[in-house]
Image (cartoon, rainbow, N blue to C red; front, side):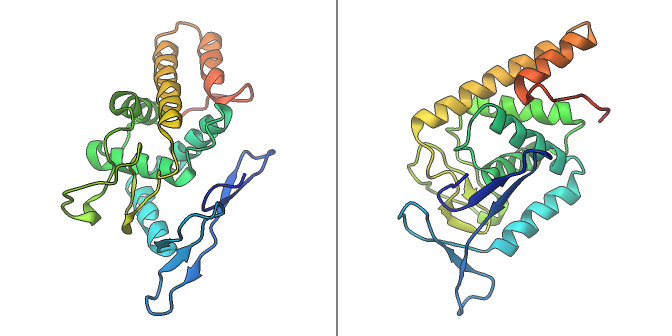
Length: 206
């Protein structure tokens, strides 16, 4: 799928999603580059290596980080929420890690991701200690700041309607997982999970 600043490739057999990010290097600032828009928008200054290093530090701090993000991308695809970019998902999970620590299980990680969005309605700006103290934020419907460039709102393309759709999907997902957690039979529990992640979904030990 083509997104404003990335080209997403989905492998149907494995379910793997890969984002290709075109960047024009800035010679005067090693590591930084301009990320062009596929929709004639302004180019954004970013540092892909620093972004990858930031995410890698979270993966190291929480061994379940990678698997949780992968599950959330599968959920996003199943629920047809294409405007919720992969990097935005990673940054929301990162923000929750900073505020709540490592997850105790993948199920708890999913629960707190969906609950966070259900409670905040994605109307609370997401930023990181790397930004220092911020006195103001962009006026966009959703604000998720790039940890390596405070001027880059990763969620700038989300409309208020799309925000509401994501919030509604997260409320339903949280309620579904809660129902599955208290369900008595394994078969019915799996059926609840398949509502979120597709009919091919299976439950393994975390």
